[in-house]
Image (cartoon, rainbow, N blue to C red; front, side, top):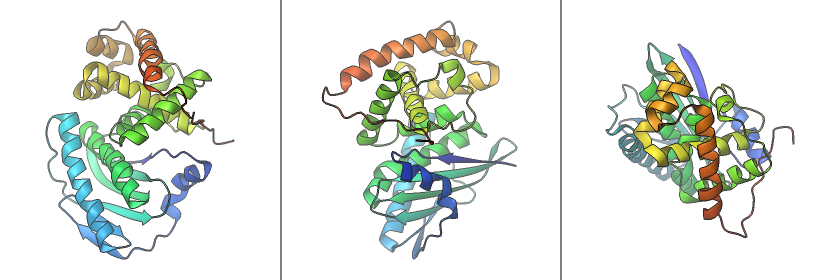
Length: 269
């Protein structure tokens, strides 16, 4: 069995640190609530129930959006640990895979309850939908980038800003290289921003199910033939050019002129 953690992007150095150590920080849990597919532990009964109910709703709606149908009930509910703070939301989901399916999964989220419900839970639940579809690890850029599409408008706009800044400072990767990244790079926020941008572009161009088919075929048979099959582009280099043209026109046009650019920091800054 292989195990793979999936991390949620954060916007500050302090938050990135929390992402790396969240599994080691003891959390005092006072209540739990169980639904068909989730068992949630949180500080209060109300928070546990709110997170569990919302996770079930997200699981249904996100699966229909991406897969065209609901997922079958899991054999065992996914454990979810909730840490309520006064900060922004983030999370961590880990999977074990065996024989082409998810063997186990665990999730933790933290932040203000309203931000957990609006941002962290949709993001982390999207990871579980992708894991069920692929039955194994999904490319990092696609897993994180497409999961950001499930977050609320505030977070999506924030990552549009991150991607704008990334391209402006030429910190982005050619797609042929991005598609091969297996581990989280030091420029974590830049990586998330670019993954989000290319995922958004592909989804807007061909829809969510086609995006998943593209990623699946890219993993199996190479990204050049997958780009041609699913998007009518000669290869990944042409896909790269198409994405950059779209980004300059669409994303830049949507962003307000007096926007505050969010700097994508590297781990060493």
